[in-house]
Amino acid sequence: MQDSFAFIIHPLNPKRDVARKYPALGKLPAWLIEFLSIFYPPVLVSEIEGIKSAANGRSLKGWFIACPLTPNMMLRLPTPLVYRKIIQTGKLAEKLGARILGLGAFTAVVGDGGLTVAKHLNIPVTTGDSYTVAQAAQAIQEAAVLLKRPLASSTVAVVGATGAIGSICAQLLATDSGRMVLIGRRTERLQEVATAVRQQGCQNVIVTADMNQLAQAHFIITVTSAVDTIIEPQHLRRGAVVCDVSRPRDVSKQVAEQRPDVLVIEGGMVEVPGPVNFNFDFGFPPKMAYACMAETMALALDGNYVSFTLGKDIKLSQVQTIDTIATRHGFKLGGFRSFERAVTSSQIAFVQAAAETEANAAIAVPYINPKTHAIVDSVNI
Image 1: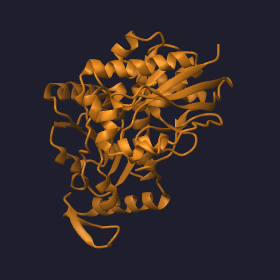
Image 2: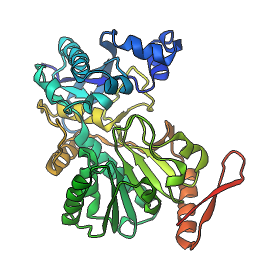
Image 3: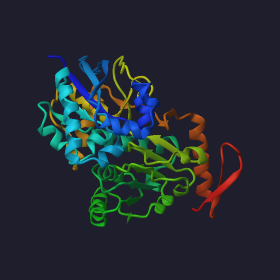
């Protein structure tokens, strides 16, 4: 039997994402697209070809299938109805011949994190969160090297630290970080994460629900289930690096427009081994996929057909295991992208210079609007 997988995607931006598959439908008003999505059946988006293991040469067949609901609809509709739509999509994966199913974006978050969905399917299910954690941490480590700013002398912040992904990201980076700011809403859970971070080696830990505390951080991982953006230009210091793992994004586009002195990178972009063709444009360059997709692919290439990451809890050992599996088969960090564009060396150099300026300053320093080249505000440090 051929190794195979399917991965569930869904529209994040109704007009943009629906238009990628159905241009005519994308011209409808967003509210109408969302209303109609309740009645849409699951959709086969594309067949994926060319994935090949670097370890053993095994090839992999796959499919992108779409659950038509948007994040807003998943939050507004009764959870049993949302489950039913996701399970219907999973049944389509079974019919196609998939041997494992990956849950993408909000289908991995809604309800109990895939546990109920897995109970109603005859194939294993994974959310991909374990490899997402591994790649997010690696992205921050790589950015620190590129910017020549050691994590040991930096402040690292994790937004959404009380969640499964955020808490493990914090623990992975604790060994290298000199100081850590954990941001979340649940105070008791924040204290538990802080204890785990200290056990991993970072003793200087701050817990808070105040987003303004991000101004302390040189490096930030943000991973929440918020529907709207939560990080705005005023939250960030000069030279900051933000790894946005969330979909929809946590970081406002105004950051890209108003703050060229900070670097926002997509979380979890992975280069897939082999001459892969996704036969669908989901906003990444050729051969690149999200880490959650890559976890599903790596498990299939490994012949490891188990429900690997499910529920709201992730163990550090899981993250280390899937990182080892994926690396063995040839998956690797796929470079940096920011708001669907490749990060250039000149961007990195600009942010590095801004970080050096900020480090030498003792007062608020200005930043420049990239369109007008005028000083538009200042950042307190």
